[in-house]
Image: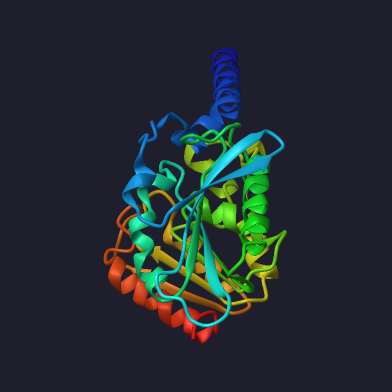
Length: 272
């Protein structure tokens, strides 16, 4: 009996130590992109790209503005994009060529501490950066403030949902993202209450009155498909795109995905 009690006590101590370790290291796990070296001249490869420096309370954060490639009459709609946690804005400009040809601008916002940006990433600092990015974009000449679309992939879904809780948007697009970081904590055998940056996307989507497009892969081993289902069902005007794909292979055909996005944006009257 005494041996069993000792085993239980040691097991409890080891578990508490494990929880304490993950509590201290969780931001390194959630934001691994701080360790990625940014290409020094990546912006030079994209004609028309404008580098924008956002002034935040903790320093300057980089963003890239890609203007529309076809300009109609009047101000143009624009998308604010947030990438995954192991990426940089440097990896993404090419993907937005299709939307730019539809007359949309795109603002790719970096995370604090990533690439050339100052600060350290957390839900608070990421949210501040995206709010500043939004305010900068809507004040820009040639941009229609009533047609701002928020697009986030993986962790980026948390960034744009945090922004949607603070600023209006015409539509929300979530690609391979989560309902909240808290349920994912159980993968590491720790309770969700220990998560410092929960990014409660489900609560934001429930309150969002605009159209929401959710895309998720059924074979996603990082953020289970059920997260995408729950987000689409929680939305007041939700739509789910299901792909036979994993986390980093979703969507399997980017061309087909952008055509779906185009149809969604036309239905939402963001583009005409």
